[in-house]
Structures are given as C-alpha cells and as structure tokens.
Image (cartoon, rainbow, N blue to C red; front, top):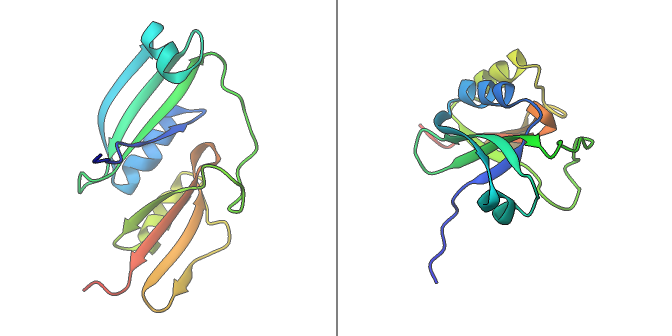
Length: 145
C-alpha cells in the first residue's frame, strides 16, 4: 500500500500569531477555514468540534502544516514539551541561513532552547521554542554551495 505524509497538525492558542511566525520563516498559507459539524466530530473524535484552521506549505511544496485553534471545546493548556518527552516531538525545517531564521524567530519572541550547534561540519542546528510552545528545529546544510 503506497503511503504519503499529508501534513502535520498542531493545535495553537493564537492562530494569527502562529501564522505570522511560520509565514515569516517562509511558509505560505494555502487555505483557511472554520470547521465544525458531524463530520468534524467523527474525524477528530470530539463532540461539538469547532475550530479555525490554516494550512501552510513550504516553498518547495513538499511539506504542510495544519494549524488549528479550537473554538469548542475549549483548548486544554499544557506545559511546553521537552525534547525528551514521549509523543509529538518537534517540526523541523531546512533553512538557507540559520542566523537569519533565528532573527525572524526572535522578532516573534521565539528563542533557541540553548543555542546553535554544528554537527560534523555538515549542519548548523537549533531548537527554537515557537508559538504556543511548539519546538521548531531549524537546520542549515553546510555542505550546500
């Protein structure tokens, strides 16, 4: 059976702030919608499911994020995840210039968990605490160009 990754869904507390962060990093909004009704209740497994969503896409068209902000039921606030917790870990992006990407993140009040690391002279990597506490990995390929 062929399988293809469709998107990664992330619940956020402020949809507009999350959209601003990810579009500033270079993603494009390819759709926005408010969803509710029996089909949404069934698909998601929540009665009265009602959410505002935005689908964002990477410039190469190969990756998509679905961001959603719950209208009903109320969103459940949790503490920010740590890199070693079981479950959804992070979303990762390749960037041409990690310094520039970190400047963009900082404009949104989002900063590295520790700093920038270099892996075997091949990559510069940093985990950033993004909007709604999302861990976002930024990676610059040092072997390009």
